[in-house]
Length: 78
Figure 1 (cartoon, rainbow, N blue to C red):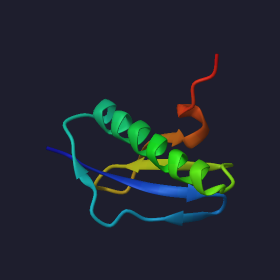
Figure 2 (cartoon, helix red, strand yellow):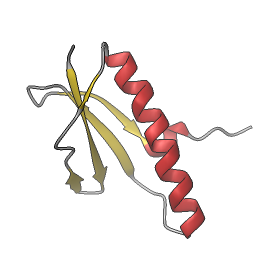
Figure 3 (spheres, rainbow, N blue to C red):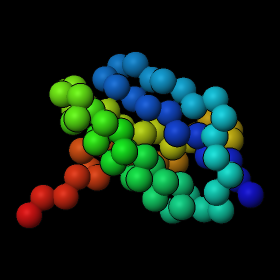
Figure 4 (spheres, rainbow, N blue to C red):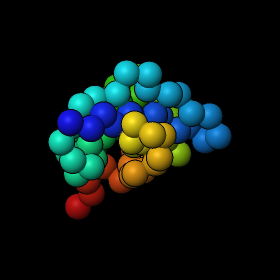
């Protein structure tokens, strides 16, 4: 099973995920990123932090970016 890494981009800085997660497909990795982004956004909203520009960079084991999931893209509006 492939390992995907979920690095957090915040503007120009990137916080790297050193462990990664075993997931069967890129689509499952994207689902995991969406859930993670929602959790992080909820925590930031509750603490009054600014929500702007953060995203998950999902990379494969070889370091190639396979998806980018902007945190704002996981919010639902009417």
